[in-house]
Image (cartoon, rainbow, N blue to C red; front, side):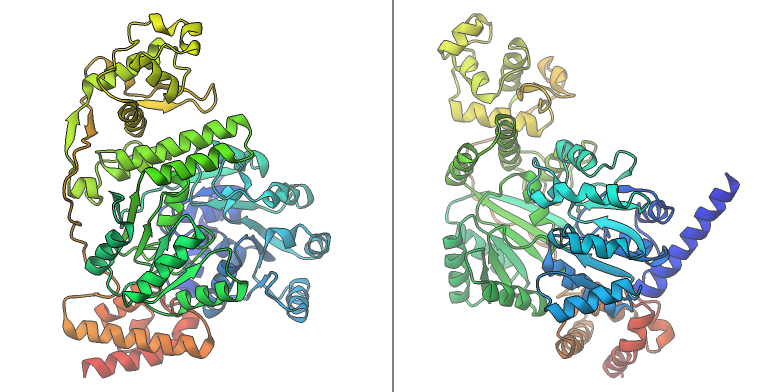
Length: 613
């Protein structure tokens, strides 16, 4: 036991040294050290960590510490290139195998793999599963397999990829190689699917938490969506990079053209565009400052750009997992960012048509309806949005965040205790087995054939809710689920059941409020401009920051890489704050590893010295 503990301490010391010397950071965050220790020791791990939380280091450092080459399975070609560019900047021997390579380039990567010349290789799942690639891997020394975006294995998840179902072959063909599966979003059913389908029953589960406190959430009822978007951009993001999501390709084109006419650089991205146009627009977004991408959900998964300052949804996303994943593409650098959304009845109808028209099994169709209801409950809630969002992923102990529209500008609310008690009574008297439609019929006193067959027309709650209409009752049920008083019984009949506080509400022991339908004028809450474009209140510091950004952009253009793979904005801001004037002081700046210090230290020191003399 003592020997094992000593080995663990030695492993942690080596991991910390790699973190400092290669990546330029002085300490691990949250569960990173424990995850790395588990994988370095040869164990499997399932990692649930928010976007920007440092998932990549959890497999990159073990790959550098273990004997052999780390193999990263990723469905994202753009992310592969970004990660490899960043690793090479840090002095790591990294490469990728995907369809963008010429045959001669792919041959060179495969030769390097066989000869043990790579620390990390990124592979698309389709290529990995090809017999040629599996045979190649069998002749290589493999340090670990990292399965990124692991939620893609789940049919209940929002980004299902059928080829991910075959990744269990890694366990079968390489049983002694540790595997680490990682995702930023996984509700209960999706998490269970990952464990079952990837054969991770013996894996340690590391659930780091889903909170992204730097993101401000705001939801508006849709009136004139483009005008609402423009008011938001003009007041809060006049020159920042961001992403605008729309449901249809046609709307993507319209909004991009409209923003360009308004004076912003906005580029469309959707599956209907020719591949070279998509690639060019994505490349500009990654490499230039202040670009807005207007996209369908075809864009964004795996985008590594750290200084995206906002994500705006002009239409409803598919569900809360998709919303969380998409909004998480903003503020990866930890600086303030905005999640802005408008929604309306047309969005709801569109999503309902999609669910009802899709080729789903009945159980999956029920789950999709429940997920849509959870999303609408989030939109309609009068309480803290972050609490509702995190509760959806099982985190119900958070205090009001103070950084969403409902916290900053509390909406008008109504005392909802009586309506809540009527709704809860209908749930309990019908046996906690039925969905919203049936429960609303009971409350409204609709004597349908199904109601009479079940005898529910004889219940005390039959007709007690006739003072409200169907639309309002559906909203009340959604808000009760969002507040945790009711839960969806996904494992059973798919109906509603009491949550932890359901009985307390029914007994009148817990206050309940619902958002008022009264329309009030809403002004945007003030957004802190403590962002990368405003590192301090000093004009001299701002001038230095812009000079460092210009130097970074020049170096990035010379190498044809995104500026952030050289240094993140947060690293430049720390240079502005500390103003290092020699290499020793520069080496203490977070994000400046040994290789980057050698390559760029003198140039950035010269720019700093010039500004302070």
